[in-house]
Length: 117
Image: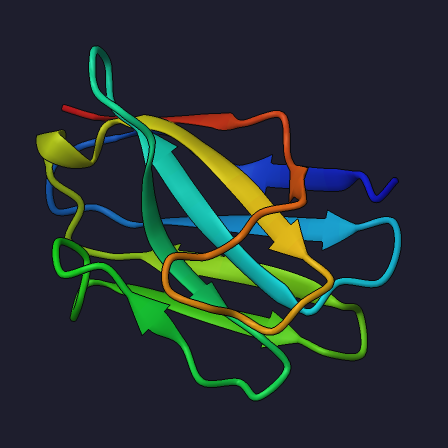
């Protein structure tokens, strides 16, 4: 079983930026981020596999950037121009497989809160 250790998140004013990071304890291929807003279903935000070709959901395209450090097998989510609608719990997700649409998840992080006011 692979554990995903997340860091980052917090509170920021609208228009601000935050960076999330996720480091797995073992091998992963597809890695990404999901978010769950209060009272809503969890949705994929962005994901990328070892081809380094990212996939973004329409609601973050142009504002968020996902990147991975293959040496560390870590994935990062740079979030710019944050808006109150971006508020939610952001969870790192991973799989040992290549990314697909929708992303198939084998492992979940514990989640980190992002609040935009």
